[in-house]
Image (cartoon, rainbow, N blue to C red; front, side):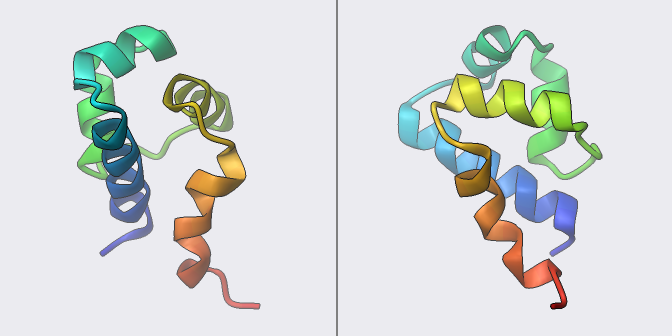
Length: 75
């Protein structure tokens, strides 16, 4: 699984936990539904601004959402 796919899976899991559709999440985040879908499929390299918008809509801190990406950091 790529970094973008892992991030997209984390977004999808949180969205589903909240019971939101992609359309609802997109509206809350000020994005288009197809853009959210492409994030969830790992097709987008999401900007920091859009990560923050998604996190606000998903009611989660960016650090919590990004924690799922720790395996990609080689420290």
